Length: 273
Image (cartoon, rainbow, N blue to C red):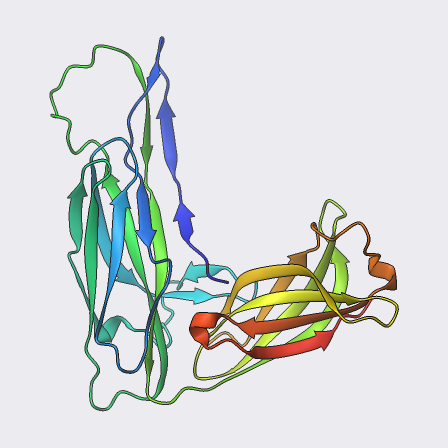
């Protein structure tokens, strides 16, 4: 799953006859950086998509993927595994952007001679630290406003691959399930072995009456990051055609690498009922 992680922590002060205050916002592209064995640098673009000037801090952090698929910071005292931070220099580390302005952030990769083969991962974190950057501190306010001060953070993975890498994927315990609202799902575990992460798409198929399997759900952008060896996935079947009866289908599920990762099927399995 190729995914962007946003955290909003806000406190609002509402005054009589209020109007909304202006705020800076962040967009970052691409949503994932992969540096292969011959790459030495890459670029990330951050853009202020809000309507106020903002000050942004840019840094590299380590995070881990849990079995649920959530990507979270390491706890205090935990040692990050396969961190890319020792090998990457990032610049600039702070920037002020007016509404609509963009900034190129350079990632420079230095590979030591003794760097082991495999994949390393860290994350670029961009944090809005001030969205009143263009407002004088003593500027008078004529009208009351609703002031929302947001600690806005966007994080994207940066993956570095060195030397020869290998990957073996599997699908365990695929079965029909239901979400809390009672809608049908396909639940499974993706398993990963090797010294690199997987980045792929899930397809759920149905074969009725001895016919050929037809895709009834395409679920893109599912990743299993190294060193996680197993990830739970619940695929919603909310778009199943009315002509398809899940109870009479021979259901199957497959996991295929995304085209940027070379394409090709990585794992498949029948779905139990």
